[in-house]
Structures are given as structure tokens and as C-alpha cells.
Length: 506
Image 1 (cartoon, rainbow, N blue to C red):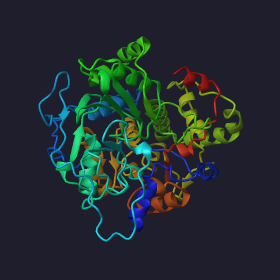
Image 2: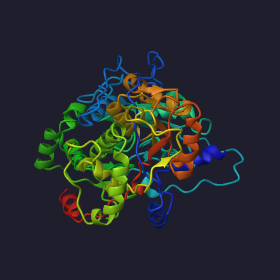
Image 3: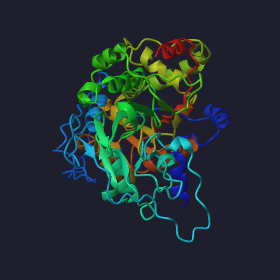
């Protein structure tokens, strides 16, 4: 039970703890990096992927990942966009412009009443039910909901699916393909009760129009858009963000969906075209009736850069650390000297150019603006100082992850360094739910050769990494470790007033 409790805590998206406590802890958290050497570790052969849910994937995935030491992180974004937008086999015949139609199941029983339960379930909060529907969102912890014909799940983190069990659930779940696979694989819910919806595609679920938009939170996480037909031929428009990383693109995509007539389809190619979405937003969209908003980081001090920028910056910094023995020490020294001035500066322009490999570039220096680094490299004594060539084999890079989440970060680092990634067997099983041969080909079971490791988030601290390095060093040449705790709670960047105007303009 201790492991399950720890997992629940780690995957809780951190909103179950008080914000003030987290602020106090933020300054003490260990933050570092992730990396790898260019040696290729033989990968486990990937058997033909068989979908875990009722809606089968159409054909093999064509997504691929070019391994290169340079360039932008667009290759990773493209890979995950292809993964998210994998087409599915419809459950039933399409209607009008909607290819995917989900009719009300004949067994619209919701939850089994607990037999002999000593404790009554908590009352259902009003915000868990979508107006004018028999739908709920992330509401698996409230006992027998006899009115509910569709349980929507935004993503597979335990503070959202909490209460969902294999034996005690008798309703029907609607979610993205990746989340559906996780529900079946991890919890064991019957596939007949799990309905996978395609991303970025308008569907019809029990006579309500539903569109899932990538929330940029973890694989399979979705912002859910509901268009509910009401009296007089009108539509009730509802946005439920779930946990999401807010961006201007989300505003444009939501505007694009709601401004598209029901007679026209909404497709991944439409929502993936930034120009089309901007044009739709510029033309204006109908008023939104209800917005259910994730407010985990709704405070000025959490002024985050965009996800792709963070991934690219980490990848560039890791490549520099990997390539130059002196770079990390130089980076940490400058971070220590310039921490006060960084708090008064805005984010510098990105650049990969550098005439000296041991000097931080503007892009790599962003690491110290966004993360609070240790002031010394965590290392164990080596028998002899490593040569420049040996350096690449002596630095271990670790990425803290949730049960599912942070995959883009270690994939980008592996791409930059042309390396494999070590994950535990449990993590591998969850990653199989993503159904990507390109992703699975990056993984290895050999923790002593891979220089990029994905570990549980709660291991990324000084004590945890010291013990981890001692373990890995038994059969490897690693003498130091650089690790990232990639969560918003460890964000060290200052509040930048200029960001307020840009957000307000949205």
C-alpha cells in the first residue's frame, strides 16, 4: 500500500497540497538536467502493437523520430502530434459531418452500490456535472451516480481517476485513446466500458457534440469541448480544461471549433493549422456559456514559458553538458553569480550559436532562470580524472516523471544525444499504452549503459540521486549525475510583468 500511496501522491498534479507550503518547498527543491552518450544500446524488438481498447487503431503508426544532435524540438512535437491524432475505427456509423458517433449504451447503469460499506460516498460537487447533460467529468469518487450515462476522464493522473476500480465501476468512460489504454492496462476496467475518442475531431456522444483538444499536460490529456443542443435550435457551449498548460493556441483552437458549423467537420488537420485557427479566432466565435478552468498555477509568480521552448532549451543545455566537460561547472558558477540579476531580466532570445563550447549560450542560461540549480555538481570520487572523451560516458542524466507525463522531455534529450532511455518495467508497460513504435524503440532495459534515465519524480532530490548514482555506478563508468524535476512547482523564474499584457490580450 505504501507504493500505491506514493503513486497517488506523485500523480496528484500537486493540487492536493497547499500553495503556500509548496512555495516554501520550491526554494529547497533539487533541479537539474537530463542527458546521454551517443552509444546505441540494442533495443528490445517491438512486437506488432495491438490496441488495448475497443476502438482499434487503423493500420500501423507512421510516426518516426529522427535522432540528431542539433535543431529544434519540432521533431518531438511532430511525433507526439502524430501519436495523439492516430485515427480510430468508429464504434458505429457516422452521422452527417461526424465520422465518430457514440450511441447511448443499452446498459446505462452507472456505479454499483457498495455492499456493506461503512462510509457513505462524498456528495457530488456541482462542477463535476456538465449542464443540460447526463455527463460528468473526472467524477469517479462519489459513489452511485444513477443519472450519469457518460463518465468523461480528462487524463490519467490519479487525482482525476481516483475512485475508479475494476470491480466497483459499472458505468461507461469516454476519453482519449491513450487515456483509455491506461485505464484498461493499469486499472483493468473492461474494454466494453471504455470508449476512446479521437483527438482534435468533433464527435457525437449520446447526441452531444464533443471535441477533445490536446491539453499539453501529459500524453492523452484533453481539454473537452461540449456543444449541447438545447431548445430553439440553440447550442450550449462548454469548455472543461482539466489540467492544462494554457497557451494562445488553445484559445484559437477553441474559437475554431465553436465557430465551425455543425454541418462541417472538425479535423486534426484543421486544428493543427495555426493559420486557420488564428483566422477563425479573428473572425470571432459564439459566446462560451460555461468554462471549467484549471487554476493550479493561477498566480503571477508562475509565469511559464511555452512547453516547446522549455523542451528545446533543456535539449540544447544537455547537449552542451554532454559535449564539454567544463560547461556544467561554468553554467552553475554563472548561475550563482547572476541569480540576482536574472530575477530582474526577461527571458533572453534563443540562440544555439556559441564560439566556445565551455561557455553557456543564451538558450542554456535559461535553465538557471527557470530552475533553481544546486550550486555544485553531485558527483562521486573517480579513480582518475576523466579525459575529454571519457566525460561523455561518466555523466548520467535523469528525468523525474509521473506514471505518465514528461515523456517529451526525455525523448528530446535522447534525440539530441542519439541515445537510448532506461525506464522501469512498470513505466515501460504504461508507455506501451501510447502505442508508438518510434517511442518504444528509444527504450532499453540496461540501466548501466543508457545515459538517460526516467525515474519517479519523488526520487529527484539530493539523497535520492546520491543513492541512485551509487547503485548505477556498480556496473558502469558514471561518476556524476544531472537530474531534472520538471514540474511547475520548481519553477524558479521571476514574475515578468510583460507577460500579463500578453495573457490579457488573449
